[in-house]
Length: 330
Image (cartoon, rainbow, N blue to C red; front, side, top):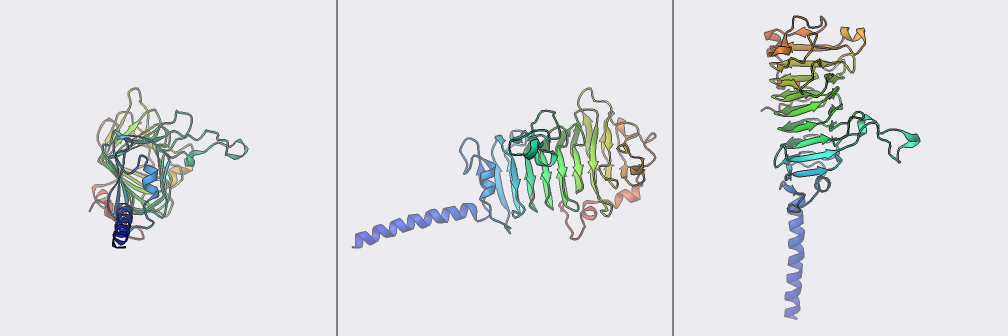
């Protein structure tokens, strides 16, 4: 009897230990490791996202080892405080290849996929951070193809790459706040677009064809839109004529300040998207830029050069102070 009791005690201890180990992995602030070679808890990032608890109050890290992860991912709105951190920015790659003109069998009446379903990574949750990782849409140039689609608030991207062609980064919801630091973003047409408030600090922005860098759709009552500070705007070989932006919606707000502008930037700087009325509403601003594309002598008359005093007031703390204050640089 004693032997049976002892055996049952051992079995229960093992079961409890396993249950405790599982809880320690998923239900606390420990790091989840993802690796294609099987050396982590998961081989796919989506599996790691699936086990995160809703509305976590602690910071959860999903550490992704080097490798190419072909996944179409959503971080849903009920997930918060998650960081996806790559082992190496250039060798940890999340990629997918949807584009707007794909026709899938499940789409009704021979409809095409459309721009807003083409994302590789869609972030719906708040307080999400990406670090040291590449997000890529590898579709051929057959239509719009989003790499990053954001809907959450207080999102931070540190030392990330965003690779694609048309519509690489879509900042999708007005009054949401995004902070990009030390990132690389490339594309062809309107490859940074949407209504959000987004600050780009010390980022490399590359035009791959003659086209437009931004297509902001800032709402009329939103004070700020896109701010590029201390960034480098350059191009592929053979690219010669690019605009800093065109207004996807009439009150588009875009500011380039303290940036290096390549010679491929057109002298007029900005485009009205074929509507003269946009010239009365679009908020296109520059301050203290340098480089061959920074000459303002031939800039369109409806853009504005800020004074030193005006530019000094534009800080992350000011820009991100909406209904609540938030300063990711602190």
